[in-house]
Image 1 (cartoon, rainbow, N blue to C red):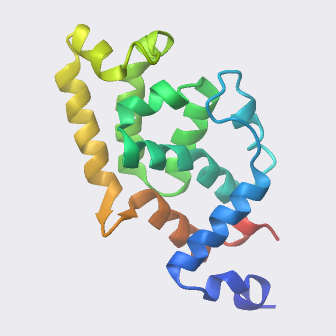
Image 2 (tube, helix red, strand yellow; image 1 turned 90 degrees about the horizontal axis):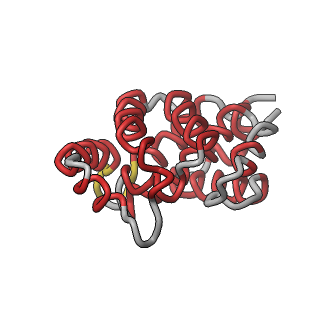
Image 3 (cartoon, rainbow, N blue to C red; image 1 turned 90 degrees about the vertical axis):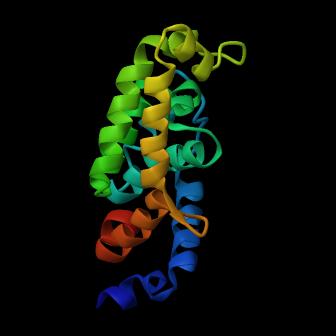
Length: 172
């Protein structure tokens, strides 16, 4: 059986394949990504390696679209999820974005316990004299994330990865 017979979704256009990946994720990933108990990241362990990377990087894509990489840690700074996200970026071949993610992690880790709706990341960084550094890291991440026309580097990498290694996304 060839790939197209085993995984007919690979014959779809990129947008349709992305929708299929998102549907697969929605059916396989349960839990609250905002939780601080590690349970959300723990449920990735049963996923195929590629789908696991996609589950871990989805919320970073949302953060980069709606906020910033520094704000990401205020919402999704639980250590196990942070580790899964970094590993997911590397698995997807997004090495430069992984490097910027590590920079943001190093910057934000000391402040994660302080973040709240009353203590926003930008304000905390500014108070600590790190506002300019946070801005530079955010700009690097946005530059790497935005492909134009509403496309993101992360979701684009999902589609490429699924076409290259469908068994690591959809299973065998």
